[in-house]
Image (cartoon, rainbow, N blue to C red):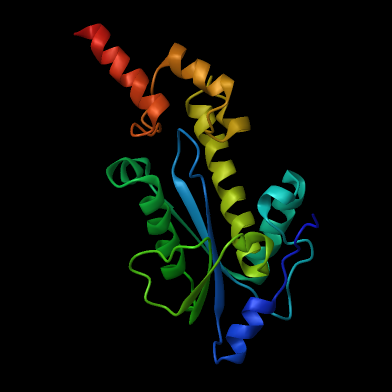
Length: 212
C-alpha cells in the first residue's frame, strides 16, 4: 500500500470555485488522559509553502519543530484549545470541535472556505467547508494544521510536566502510557487530568470508595 502525500489540489479546487482564503483545520489530543485538546487553522500562501508538510505523525519531531517555525513566519496561523473542564462537561469529540471553531475564528484574515480533517462538520461552523477523511495525508493546509497543533500541544505538555513531575508528560504528552498510568495510581489525579476518561474516573471512584 503506497503512502499518500498531501498536495494542494483541494485548495486549488476551492479557489477555482471562487474562494480566496482556504484554511485547513485539524486537532490533536483526543486520546490523552491529561491536558487540553488543541486545534490549529492554517491558511497557506500558495507561493510560499514549506517543503516537507505531511501528517504530523509522519514527520520527525525535529522536522515538526522546523516546519512549525516556518509556518508561523509564512502562513496565517491560529491556535486554540478546549480545556479539560470543557472536555469533561461535553465530551472529547464536542470539545475538539469547539477548539476547531475557535481556531478558525482566530485567523487574522477570515477564511472563506474550510478544509476539515475527518468526516464531521463542527457545530456552529457557518463558513463553506469540506470534510476530508485522512485529510492530514491529503491536503497540505490540513497537514500544516496538524503539525502546528501537535507542536503547540507537545510544548504545552512539556511545560505542565515541570509543574507536575512523575507522569512523564514531557515524553508521553498525557497519553495513557504505562508510566503515566502507574504514576496516576501512585501520585493521584492532578487538575489537568480528564475526570470523564475511564482510567482517571476509576481512580477517583476507587479513592472515594476507600474514604467512605
